Image 1: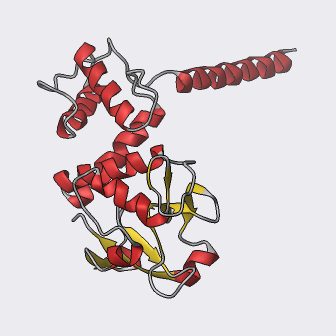
Image 2: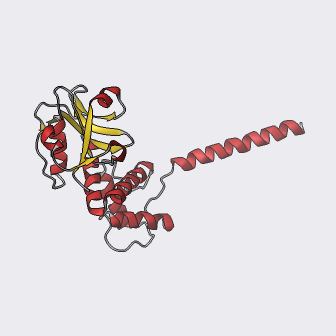
Image 3: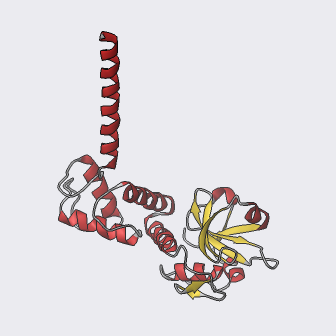
Length: 229
């Protein structure tokens, strides 16, 4: 009996720990009313990105919640004012882009990427350059115009501006070009990082995310241009 009791006891502890971990993982990471070093670091990031007014003091108060909500809204997330997993990932992405590109251009690149993702699923439209429908170069043209960068309207014109970038040195926000239905740059999209780019695809019929490693695009890849340093 003692052996059986021991097994039952150990099993009960394991189940308790598993349930506790699952419950803890489901809880919000940071929310109003909390304080401490984690809150302080979040506030510093929000302040650096222009979302938090006043000092970072490590107290998750109402102004911090509003800052989180503004960031969530701009990032296409549910604006609940709670720093959960998705918001934390968005902050990390924003921080990485800003660090790699310099704060000012990093912000603009992050804005472009955030806007681009909001248009996922928008229909492909030949010669389209608005949220009602995009073609590939119209999508790039529209997004960059929103952050004050005025590019040529067509893919071949866009390929002629900015700085050439080696494929091994691609960074989020770089414009990638392909030769598809005709020789030369006839298709383009915006590199997101992690070997993926977002584009208005005639084949998919909508704005979509595609791996750069997809065979079709590997064979047709022409190069990339960086229009924000």
